[in-house]
Amino acid sequence: MSTLKIENLHVKVGEKEILRGIDLEIKTGEIHAIMGPNGNGKSTLLSAIMGHPKYIVTDGSITLDGQDVLSMGVDERARAGLFLGMQYPQEIPGVTNSDFLKAAMNARREEPISLFKFIRTLDKNIEELDMDENLAHRYLNEGFSGGEKKRNEILQMKLLQPKFALLDEIDSGLDVDALRVVSEAINSMRSDDFGCVMVSHYERLFELVVPTHVHVLVQGQIVMSGGYEVIEKIDHEGYEWVRELGIEIHQEEEKQPILLESCGKKEQLKHDK
Amino acid sequence: MINDILSSKFYLVLKNGECIDSHLPDRVFYQDGLLKFENQELLEVQVVYILETQQEFQIDIRIAKHCQIQMIETKILAKDAVLHKNMYLDENAQVHIFSENQSDNSRSIENVYLAGYALCQYGFAELSDHHFEGVYHYYLDGEGADVKVRMAILSKQDEDKHYEVLIQHNRPHTYGQMDNYGVVKDQGRLIIDGIGTITKGQHGSASHQTNKIMVFDSSCVAGANPYLYIDDFDVKASHAAGVGKMDEEHLYYLQSRGLSKKQAMHLITYGYLKPVVEVIDNEMLKDRFEKALSKVGA
Image (cartoon, rainbow over all chains, first blue to last red; front, side, top):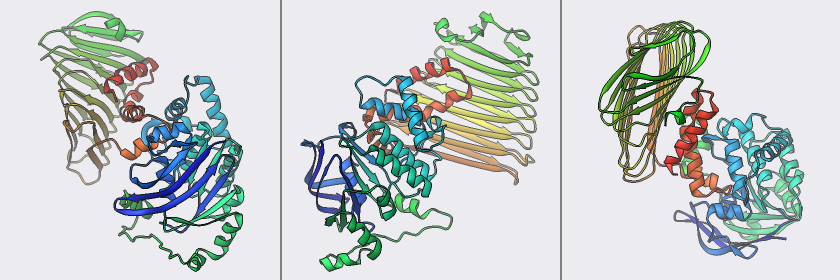
């Protein structure tokens, strides 16, 4: 059994403190759901665990089976068994999926995988995820629909077999059928050797992938932890009840000027960079 | 060295203006600086240009109507040598060329003329280890002529490279596209001038270009200059140019899957330059290009 332990984690972006003392312990065999209003630190938590250079840890610790994760580079964290399924996966022109996936699989192996085994494993997983059979030859995420990108993240998770997967709104952009396929893929990973942290706004994902633990993250802190009943409460009542705990909810939706015919989400992302 | 280069069944090796070795198919001829293709079967032919001293050499290549050629050319030009090359594509000729460069500090001046509905796809792997100047001009002289140029350029150490790529539309309904990609590292210098010209009356034509240079070090010098000269209203034209560092988010994404920074940089650089080999379907060529890319050292 492995344990990912986060203690008193404080993280800032630029001069702004986003996480203000997160404590979380995830063991393999567990699935943790993190919910909370927009802009309160859910994605920041996952990105900080993975080591995105934009997120600066100012206090606290993250350990994986006692090993200091914060002293590891991004690639070392991945090789140690962490995986981040990203909300907005990068499009990388010229790099084919197969070249990338092979390199990623080999990064965690002492002996390179044989071409035959690689193709067989890839084809099997592509079929299970109901993906485009030409995917291997397409450039990494380039020209992929939102749903295809998310499925490609899950494909990578299945191929890399991490100890802990951090899935950041993996259900956004998925239609009903795709959500079912992705949920089945996550469920197929469930074992005593696999732990998962999922961030989502929607109960539907958690109906299909039932979490063992549920946390509510508001204002950079976990304000409540429990079981599935917390998801049902949020689904019925939203987050207004959090105020009763004496916590102000801050919805981070900074308005940006957006031109007609442009994608609002992309413009927001550009601004975030 | 020649044996390492030759991989095709048919080839022509020109050294200091003389043919020193050749095996050409029926109805393909070479004599006194003129290479003629009159065979309409799909052919793969390799041409090697060697200039061992400071000298100038001119070759004309004529491709007859309906010929389909896949050509692999290798330039090995000595210091201060100049290669002049004129290529003429007759109507409906189709030519795919992959050009690799192993030259010293030298120049290559090339003009390609396309008649009606001729098609030319040209991929340049400019990975030589010295200064170089390339002037590559394409003239769309027949209606429906179509040219696509793709360049992969590396300038490293103190190499100074300059490329001028011109696509000039002299007839209506012609199509020109160039995608010039460069990588500069160490104290390397690279200037790319992309020029798209649509002359008056050439309605229905399209001229597109992308010039991108990725710089690795602060001491690099790079310039990507797009020029569009449009003298007709009913045309499509676009240009994009950029010089910048490798995208940090791309690096992060690959590293988050366990690739080291060096592996991630290599994969991104390889992907950035690799599409140049896709003009020709030849596995050996792809392997050779991949090995040559190790010079990038990313």
